[in-house]
Image 1 (cartoon, rainbow, N blue to C red):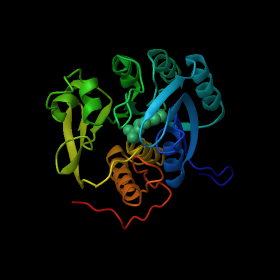
Image 2 (tube, rainbow, N blue to C red):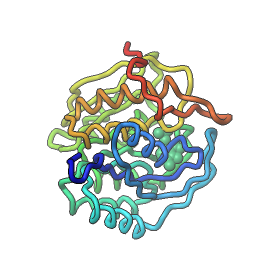
Image 3 (spheres, rainbow, N blue to C red):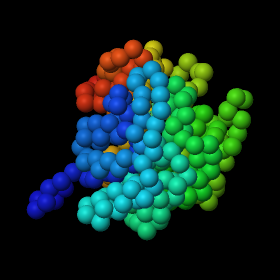
Length: 275
Ligand code: PLP
């Protein structure tokens, strides 16, 4: 912030609207606001869902998405863009077209292919256009283990090796780094692994919590984007974001009949439980 025009860092979030308020743009806006940033939301899709299931969704036209992004980028200083649900190859191409003109912006990709309950939120083969058109522009991609397998073109029904997926997603000359989250693994601890140029740099172990959460991946990616927008190095941003997420999960609540929702507006740094 500067004295003449004080404002928090602006982060553009490109994703879908979830009427339950658990995932998508609501999760992004709450996380960024709680972490001291201003969110500029670009809507890609209207979804019909609750805390139990996705019923259907309607994508916004790619040209409207391009215009939403361009309009805000022409007006505000945006240092970080975070993408979530993109839904179609046309939308990925539109986002890529805008961002390829703005190499000063850091891109964080949360690759959303389906909801936490495995209902589709994208067309088949979206992962290929994300790999081809967005990865070369990105600073970080943060898939969970099944998403990492899809991006690495591995069989998601077989045992998935995170190290092998990371090496296939971000090869030795890639600029984009990779955080593979372990929430969908079978292990008793959640292990999140951070890779640069396909090599593991660091891993974090967290206690596996009792409930399923709607919007935890969106919360994590937006919290990372907030840290980067505030000038943190990637590793520090990952540390800070995971502490924020675990606290939001520990204070999460169950407003409906399905999954819990992270409480992104109550952040007590004393709560996190690191194993
Ligand atoms: N974005 C939207 C619009 C969604 O509806 C969902 C899941 O339902 C997600 C993203 C991904 O949510 P999560 O953070 O639970 O992986």
